[in-house]
Image 1 (cartoon, helix red, strand yellow):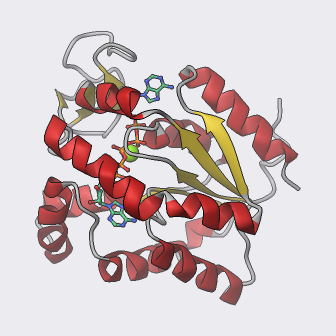
Image 2: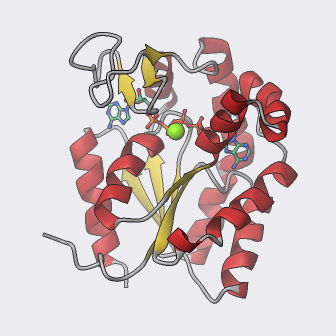
Length: 225
Ligand code: AP5
Ligand code: MG
């Protein structure tokens, strides 16, 4: 069942605008390939919740829909990638997000004699992104993600997985969403060309159904050498 990669390594990046489905697909991919899910957004949100120094620094940028400065992100990810559980691969979600971050990641990988297997580029039009993000609900406790229309929980306002309360992310209001999309266009979209040139980028129609997107990604991973 396409599990040929299980004993091998998978090092992958999920790239795409806010609301493209990175987090949604990541949850399924890391289960299948048994690798850690490294979401810089989740790491920052956890730090904000716990009131750490990093959380305090990141908070204002995130609430405005701006990027957190590179210097607060790069070392954090490099440290994370050096932990034991990343030995058999990892899935990066929301990192890199600037050309600078991508260059630092490349430096780190080549110093460690590693290479990225695939950069998964999820493509979704702006109109759909806005609908998705303003309709998203996330579990306060386990972080699972839903959509009030597309992917509703079995019981309104309650997480299917852990029974936690479903809330709206602070940056999922319309003004912040529009700003996040603009920031993506300006600062993150240039990574598409960067990774295309490196030969590791594969495009996916992120507007297809959850299962269709997942199956297409798994197939593409199987085809990478
Ligand atoms: P982050 O948490 O990474 O947010 P994001 O990139 O804006 O992306 P989202 O998490 O909003 O969207 P997603 O693609 O994961 O979509 P999802 O699967 O949830 O970053 C937040 C902030 O942190 C940034 O703004 C920045 O400030 C900071 N930050 C993080 N990393 C940084 C970095 N490297 N450098 C600097 N700053 C950084 O899906 C969205 C919705 O659509 C859900 O409701 C879902 O149910 C639904 N959906 C998903 N797939 C489908 C489908 N196929 N069909 C229908 N609906 C679907
Ligand atoms: Mg996400």
